[in-house]
Image 1 (cartoon, rainbow, N blue to C red):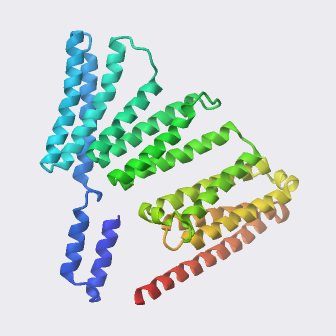
Image 2 (cartoon, rainbow, N blue to C red):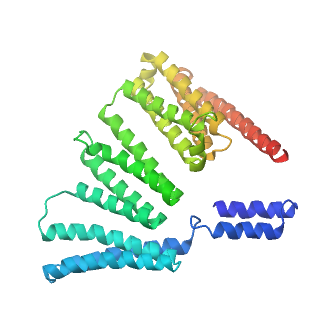
Image 3 (tube, rainbow, N blue to C red):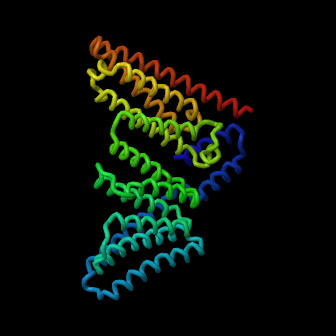
Length: 379
């Protein structure tokens, strides 16, 4: 997507004489040469490695009983070392795509070997502990080989652990295990920066959002919902205000921190609506809780305006999320205050006018951003 836009922009600049054709071609070649740019061959190689790894593990497990115990253990260890040593050799030759595929095979083999050896020797333990060890091994390999594909695999393993744990422990907090998902997220973010694998950072942020939502379910209340929204907004301000001490780090991370922080705040505001109103679309809730809902609605609209003002110009993800939140809140206010008073026809009339007003505000903001960009270009 970005490459296509870059190519179109360069063509326009070349036609206008702003950029030389040779320079534009050199820019495209430099972008295509980056390891982080999209490569269909790289993706297909990783998919092939994953399928081959699964096929190999299934073949071994199907013939498991026919293989002597000592031979089983030796074969598993040899297979893992063969994949990792082969990846190191290919990296030395500059074959990064094939090396990434072998690393995937090695990590998948390691996980399968843990399961098969545990079954063979009747070792005690559970799936969650095995997933933690598997995730740790994937992270170590990612750091040693500086492999972005391995970071993505570690993200998948973290998601798998998080999904299994939160599903099985939806209503209970058991020891230190609930802290493992945020710890995995922190490890993933560190790996993303160390390995330079920006695409994998979404695993960490989405897992954090999911874990915090699960945490709200453990302490579901109006105060918890308010705290949820407040924390999200504070984090958004910390990564969006120009004077924030975190800005040097945030700039290197791109648009992702601001978007997920505002997403967290938006989810929190949604939960506040639900807790105060006793139901998002309950008209009786509006009668019983009119003042609190007015305050929450005002806070929601204000948060969207603040998000657009601070991050809307340079962060398209935040801008469109803020537009969506603003529009949903306008429709919610219209449905609760107008629909029950003057009937369906009046509701659609006034809701349409309010949405038209929101559209006008959005158009004015877009023009303002566009004019600011032109002024910067001229300067």
